[in-house]
Amino acid sequence: MTTTTTMTAVNPRAARRPTGGGQDAVGRGPREGVIPRTAAFIVMGVFTLYFLTPIWWLLIASTKDRGDLFSTNPLWFADFRFFENVGALVAYRDGVYLRWLLNSLLYAGVGAVVATLLASMCGYALAKYRFPGRETLFNVVLGGVLVPATALALPLFLLFSQVQLTNTFWAVFLPSIVSPFGVYLSRVFAEASVPDELLEASRLDGAGEVRTFFTVSIRLMFPALVTVFLFQFVSIWNNFFLPLIMLRSEELFPVTYGLYAWNSTINQFPELRTFVLVGSLLSIVPLIITFLLLQRYWRTGLGTGALK
Amino acid sequence: MTTSPSIAGVAGAVAAPDAPVQKRKRPRVQSPGAIVAFVSPFALVFTLFYVIPIGYAVWQSLLVVEREGTFGEAREVFGGFAQYALVFQNAEFWSSVGRVFLFGVVQVPVMLGLALLFALLLDSPLLRGKKFFRLAFFVPYAVPGVIAAIMWGFLYSPNLSPFEAVTSQVDFLSSDLVLWSIANVVTWVFVGYNMLIIYSTLLAIPGDIYEAARLDGAGQARIAWSIKIPLIRPALVLTGVLSIIGTLQLLAEPQTFRSFSSAVTSTYTPNMTIYATSSIPNVSLAAAFSVVLALATFVLSFTFLRITRRKAAAS
Image 1 (tube, each protein chain N blue to C red):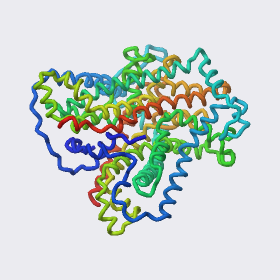
Image 2: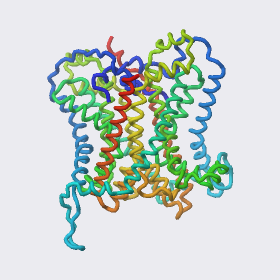
Image 3: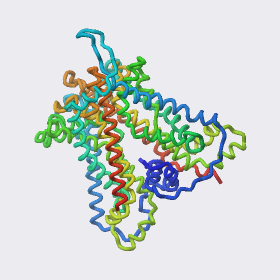
Image 4: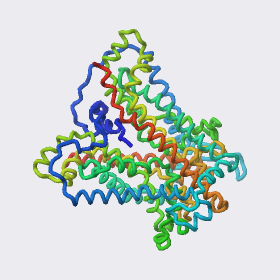
């Protein structure tokens, strides 16, 4: 980790550079040769197949009934049974799958919103105020960044057992609202995008510090907050060890754990195979939608233009 | 998928460790109330769900269970480093550590090498359709480890796979190959993510740096090798550290593979050993495993940072 001083050397212009252009915009020198261009395209094409084929296969498999799954071309449609499959999946055991999906959305969605709020307030204070213990706090947070969520699962389990909180919603939700990485990012961004002059002006207008944060600063930091939210959302959504060690009751499972549990018993209950495949496909969709919906905020420039 | 400005920003910040920093004069605000209001919520949850659990795990690892007689009341008493002595005698734990180490030595360089190659291609004028490739390569990152393992498990299996011609000849789920089959799953998920981090750093490099090289007639490969790679070294170090940490923590993929392959034992990786030990339940030993694993992670990532720094200083 670099020292804190370099964290302030963020280049907002670099962040605002239009994406997609890459280096095209820069000095169109001599045309590149045909051979390197063809080679580049072949490499990227082959790997596109590598990255997308498994997802294509899952999509196809989700549209087949059990017989067709084994007897028809795995990479092309047979009888289109997708909606029947989804219907059977959500009806299975009183809609436990939908319950899991909802749990995942609560753990990851609400957890990431709360985490973003707490982390951004702390990062903002670290960037914009001077107070005793500031550096210490920041270094402790940086240490926290290096502790992966998985490593905390067992310690959290031991602690929650002591207070009889294992196998509850809170056992998975509460640890999810801590995002040291979010504090670090918010600090970097508050440094770069919230000008002191603006805060001064706000103070002269007689607005309180907290109110200024919620009305002015948070808007300037918005692209960073979306990023913190996304990172935390993905990390909660993917955190498998915590629910695995904390939860016993099926109705509290996030969708990843639920599908894992079904997949573990496929040999005894072959009818679960279709459900695991369709359920896997449906569980990927929310994350992809979240990425695509928030795309335009990622692009939003930093609010350095607020100061004229 | 666009690159996030903040990744670019952070990467840019990391990429310029020696850049002169203009320290703005901060007004000395005396608003302790506001500072407490901003900092204390995070400080509270961080203490409750980061600091205290770690402290408690360390404490728990120092306890042993004592019984009076064979069927007596079990009591936890302070046992010093008794659990740690057991950790060092535990062959299963150390073979799982060796396994993830072997995994990491091969998988991390392959994954980061691919991520670097793709990022450089995206950043070069050689390629059309960059937006599409960037999105296509990043999609697997939206697939959780468990789901990715389920998908690939089916793809590897002899009877369901669309690649039956291959899977009927090669048993990807055998004890010899299953570790590398898992490595492929992890690579598939994370290459695009690492590619984006590296690519964002490349975007943060001002384009006019390449002008002189281009005038001298350097080709894209030469520019990538001599200019770009040295400039993005910090991003490579960062992705390297994150990947090493991730490898030591392997759990979801191998745990899911247990239903596809009997070669994956319940103590296949260190975290699986911890989980299996805690479900016995032998929480003190599990806690000791956890502490040892956390220390090993720290030492490894720290060593990696030291080595890469020294290399950077030498070049």
